[in-house]
Amino acid sequence: MSGGAHRSTSCCHTVEQPTGGRKNDSGSGALWSGRLAAVLFTLFQTLLKNELDPRRWLAAYFDACARNGGQAPEDVTAFLPWNLSDEQRTTFRLPQEQPP
Image (cartoon, rainbow, N blue to C red; front, side, top):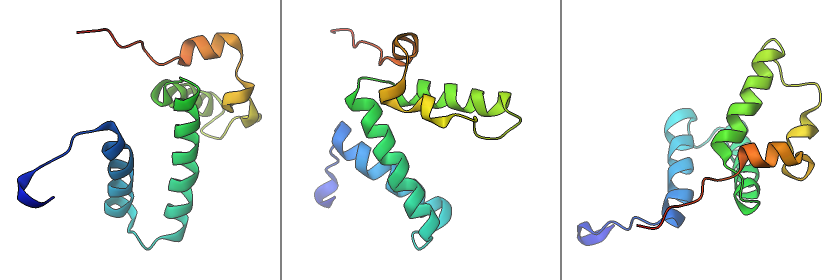
């Protein structure tokens, strides 16, 4: 940004942070990396729109992968936001922000 100004908004971080990581980690020209990033960004935004915490969701998904011998769970549809049980929704719910 010009003039040394830096905007610190969640919108900027949502867009800049993941794309910067993709560019630095796998090269911006890697087609598979761009496709994976698009799928993950869509999934994460869907989780957020449903007031679910992507980090908690990912932790549960990776745990299921570990329990399945390092492979994706047999039924990945159970992890789709619209298929979550009430118990999963409660577990993955975004923490409520406390007023200052």
